[in-house]
Image (cartoon, rainbow, N blue to C red; front, side, top):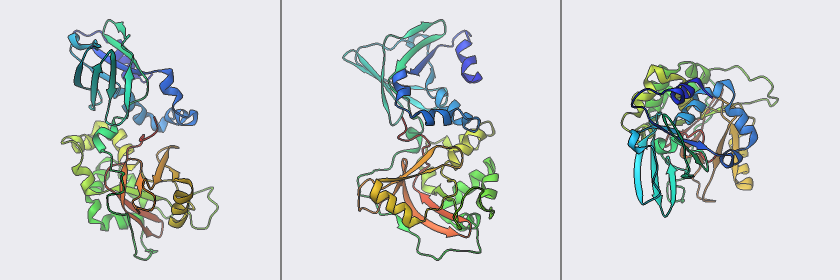
Amino acid sequence: MPQDIEERFSSTKAGYRFQFFAPSNEAFARIPEQLLSNFSLPQNYPLLLSLLRAHLAEVPAAQTTIAAGESNSVIQSVEGYPLHISAASGEAYVEAGYYRSQVNLSGIAAENGVVYKISRFLDPYASSFGIALRNGTGKATVLDASPKAEGKTMTDLVLAEPQLSNWTAIITEVLYGIMKRLGDRRGPEGVTCTTPHPFAILPSNTAFDLLPSNYTKLLRAPFNFALSSHLLAWSLTVPTCATFEDIMTAIRTEGEFKIFSHRADINLTIYEPVKGSGELFVNNARIMLANRCAGNGCIWIADRLVDPVFGMF
């Protein structure tokens, strides 16, 4: 267990009472074994810690017990994401924007709070990033028609794109190395095709308008840089030999195209929810523009920040 969480559980400081929504064995069984292993990798520690802290809430001592009667309430996790608690007819549920998880009301009482088992992991990021409508009523993804800019890098394309000015400003503060990575012309090791390239699915300026009022400030906070660099750059991919046509062929024949994030061996999933609509999505986000290419890779633009764990739990 990460030290930050362990210290909170071990604390008996006056006035501190906690509710911890602990995923049950059933919840772990929903997740592929390889994905669980990837979450435990050192580079994924900031994301794992954030997820665990999103399952832990500090509440007034009188509110540590969830009653079985009719009730609805919202509490704040120690990670800052809202948790919605509802109870009726002897059952209780907790949700954090996407997944709704049943709560076992037989909580385990401790001196400093109560532990409740829940039936699945919570996805806290969906509540802040939002989930694009996937009913085929939106605009089709625009395929960039400009020729490949062989003499430029992805960094050049990002700096020239007005829709990416917010992301550029924040990532420059949080982890400037990402901009350097987008400008890297070196070929990746171990990729055998002649033109391997990554692509970066980056959030538009409107994506930041959709965030809660203080979220951008938190992304910029120095104490949060390790997690912010994950959330802001999760949708930069590893190099691939797949062309845009290859990606679309996979979507049409298999329903989706999966590719690893460069941050970790965890998939991004590109798909078309309504077949033939032309609307492409990645995880929770709608892709507004696809395949604007430089000599070292391509940039795509999404309507919101990409939720790194969307659909995984």
